[in-house]
Image (cartoon, rainbow, N blue to C red; front, side, top):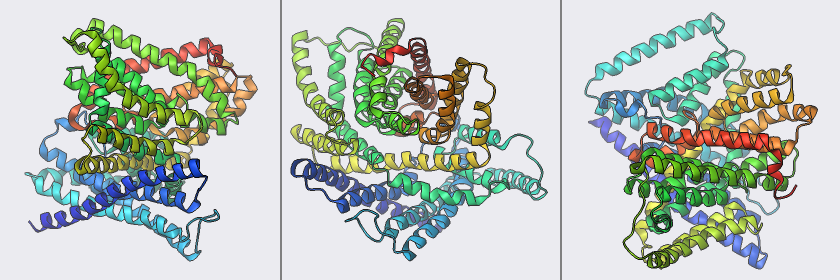
Length: 626
């Protein structure tokens, strides 16, 4: 009983950390909105204020890591996990904490402490005039965050131990793990060669652990740590860079839009504004089956375009649209597939972060890429809608129409009143980005204020709504960024094991013709997109391809669009598609992983069809000018 009391106090530490983060995420939205209005209306900017903003952003997702673990928000593939007995789930949780979370976090704390201590000794300050001093403070938050994660992992072990009815199962599993660990150690000690290339073994181990139900982010981090330990040519020193890479994520102003757009979506979802928007658009389709799913695609495309960030778009649409579609008896597969597919349009539709990174790495004009991506984005939306209409026609019960007994004129009038305020908000957010008036982060903050205003207009704005939206924002943001940290660790070890050199040798070999090269390049990028983030692909693989593209005389803008479309498809592809993890994390128990997988397959096929159309008719990308 004593361990249960100890776990209670550890949980309270994470609880208070999460509540502090929840307060700060609201403060962040208000501060960014204030800063944007002061700069654009009064030309009064402040470097120090902007740095305070990204410091708050860092604290929000870092303090949220342990809070998300406390609430089991770190997403896992539950194909088998949901069928496990209570004891088996407890054993998986204990193994996850002992073998993945705690070892990875201990190493991270050690390396992050060195980074923060060096910053303290060097009296590091902001490189920008008027910026903040004592840069070591924000770096020390990295240490604090993973210390809290370790404490919460201990709490999870104690709680899972308390839940076990049969302790013998745990001891048997631990014995098997110990034997396997001893065998691996002996093989390493005697410097035995790998039977298979360790790059492939990394992927295989990650796949097995994911299928067994271990949390996604910790699988990536734990597998990276394991292979760094057993590979002499790698070593733990390669992960010394991880805190610095994480610090780079912390300083990415664009990623600050993630918690702000999530907060905006949660406010709209809780105030029923977004639900009314989707419901009203569905009613406007009248007797058309699948009308609500079509509305999801259209609204999802607008939201995706306003963020340009897949994590925020998918999570936001999952929170808003999924409960409504399930309420109207839609197939869980169709509902989740349409949400994931429309959410990932942010990979392609301008302003897309993918296109910005590709433009930088391929030395292309981002404006040219934005214009070239318009037609492929529209093409995908049309294909999605056509598929939904056909699916609804063939399976009437899976996508029922929303029939109203009211006269259509009355429905249209009521729908207009319901649609106009949210559409004005979305149009303001999207329009400010497209017009170049504001950045996605600034637009997201204005969107949060607009969402608060709409909630107040509907007389549902109260403390409970704000508390719910802020707390859930912290959980979901932490889940997304922990996956990003784990994927970064995975890619560091992957490159050190020779994955980058393997790709270079593969691409620079004799591929015969440009079409063979394009096919192979697309296949490899597609497969890599399962395991590593598009930023890693852009920085590792794309520079290898640039000289080959030039040597074959391939249009680089067209090739960049193919890469962007390819990466979008990989974000949806089971079992590693990141959009699927984000959707499952936001949806919780509302939909199973198996239903998500079934739902996205048709949309993946449609993306391949769209990719084929752009390959066969490359001039389509220039309909809006070069």
